[in-house]
Every structure is written in C-alpha cells, then in structure tokens.
Length: 303
Image 1 (cartoon, rainbow, N blue to C red):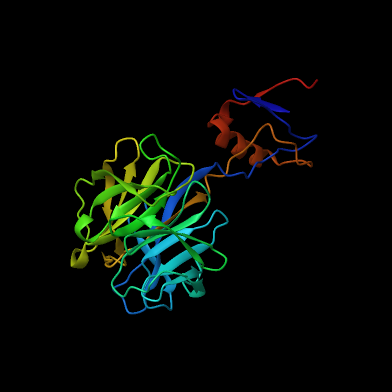
Image 2 (image 1 turned 30 degrees about the horizontal axis):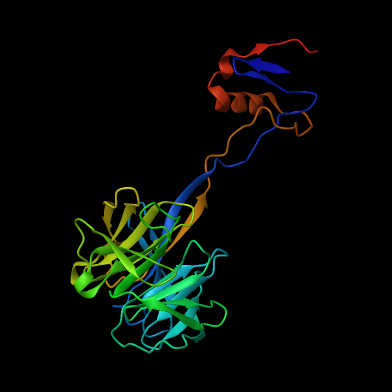
C-alpha cells in the first residue's frame, strides 16, 4: 500500500480502484421551429451560447407552439390546420396526433402550448385557452383569455401566479407577460418585458424551476433567447440566435429540456479495488491526478 498526503491507496494486493464516474453537470437546450424557412426545420438551441443546430424538416406547413411532456415527447400545434402534432427530436419530422376538436383553424393565428403544473396540456389559440388530450388531440374549452397568446410556459406555482402557467402576448400585446388561470382561462397582466418587443415569440419552462425561458422573433433582425426569473420578471441573458455564423429568423415556438453533460473522469481512492497488480508508473499517474503530489509519496505500514 502506498500513501500520499491525501491518504493511502491499495497497491500490490488489491490493485488501484479508478473511478470513471462523471461529475454531474446539467445545461438547458431549447427546441424551436423557424417559420421563415421553406422546410420549417426544427432546431436545437444551446441556451448558454445562442448557437442553433438544425435537426431536420418538420414536414408541416406551420408550427406555433412546442411542449415537451414529462416523458420527453415533443408536441406541437399547427393553428392553420388546428392539429396537435408529435415531433421527433432526432429527425425533426412531425406526425399528426389528432385534430383539436372545437378549435377553428386559423391561418394567421398565434398559439402557445405547454404542460402546466397540474400535469395537463394546454393550448392558447385565438384568444382562448383549451385543455388538450395529448393522446388524441381532443380539446376542451377552458375560457377566453382576452389576449392573443404567442407562447405558454408551465413552471412551479408562484406567489403571483398560482397556476404556474405563464403566457407571452403577441399582436398588440407583444412583449407582455401574463399569468393564466387553468380553471377559467382568465389572464392577469404581470409586466412588459424590458428590452424586448418581439413580433412574435415562444415561452417555456421546467416544472421544478421558477425560471421562464423565451425566444423572441424580431422579424428580419433575427431572433433572441432570454431568461426571466419569476421572482423579478426582468429579462436577462438576452442572446442572439445564430446558425452557422448567421442570424436565425422566424423562431416562434419553444420547448425547454434539461440535459446532462459529462464532467471530467476522476480517480476515486475510496472505490472498491479492481484486483490485480497495478504497475508503479500507473500508480504514480493516479496519485498525481489526485493531488499532484506523487513525488512526495511515502510508504506506510501494512495492517
């Protein structure tokens, strides 16, 4: 057994236990559709940098709302056909789940789609809120919102928004943020987002957070991503969205996902020994990785 100032590591008898476990790290990515390109591609957006990566064509005429289910299924809504869709996060291709019953098609309407804190799927369309069955697309009228909704987000219930369902306004209410009642559809005005005046946009959140994530479509000027803390409702980390070095325009929908990223592989001196004899050179490297003190190893007695 050899010891360093960090402790002893099993040597000749049991070998050295090297742990390959990655340190836990997470990041946030968004899925958005560009309604300005003819293929209506689905993009993955890194919310730390604004870099977008094309996933593939959606195969549908228009998408105005995206939402990820708790199990990771990506749903979308096409207001022009009044259909609920399911899209692949691997290829971008979307298939029809069903028609939003009782919802009239709207060729120019904006829409928001979100899973709320109550676990149900909601769509805001034509200034009204509907509850949607994700298995069939059947929609149930909840109530009139009185405002055109450009995005919906479901996060943890908040003091000023008990439902946890937030809406981003569009048309004459663009840039405004509302709290939406899941019982009646009524909205409560919360704020106008400072520094943002999007032609259209998307909104989403994570059910265990108090943060809203958004995308702002600024027409020919490109698109931006941003964060809004439910505590102060002030937009921050406003970043331009780029793809292959150029502006990405026409982003009017957003679904957010937390992803795990691999951390550095490390040596674990307390793990179960792997058996066998580890060469001294490998032992020295391992100890150096632990503390950079391999040159000061000292032999300690066996017990």
